[in-house]
Length: 131
Image (cartoon, rainbow, N blue to C red):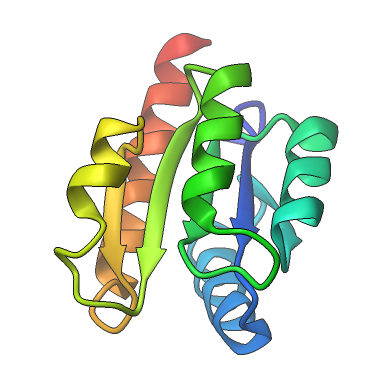
C-alpha cells in the first residue's frame, strides 16, 4: 500500500479537532498517508503549495479569512484535489455555496467522524486507481 501515499491537508483553527482527526486517520491508515496541518488561511495556502495534497479537510470558520475564500483560491490552482468542507454551523447554511464553488464533500463536525474516514477511503481508492 505504501507506494500510494496519500497526502492530506487539515486546515482548522481548533488544535483539538486537528489532533482528533490526525489520531483517527493515523490509527486507521498507519503509513499509507501523510498529514499536514494548518490553523489559518495563510498557513493553509502555504501548506497547499508545499505539499500538493490529494485531499483537504477545510474548516469554514478560520481566524483570518473564511474557508470558503480558501476553497476558491485552491480551486483556481488545482481542479483535482478533493476538498471536504468542515462546519460547526447549521449544516445547510453554506452547503450550496461550497458545492457551487467546487467542494467535493460537506461535513458537519459533530457528526462527521464516520464520514471523514469514508472520504479518506474514497481518496485512497482513487489514488490507487491513478497509479
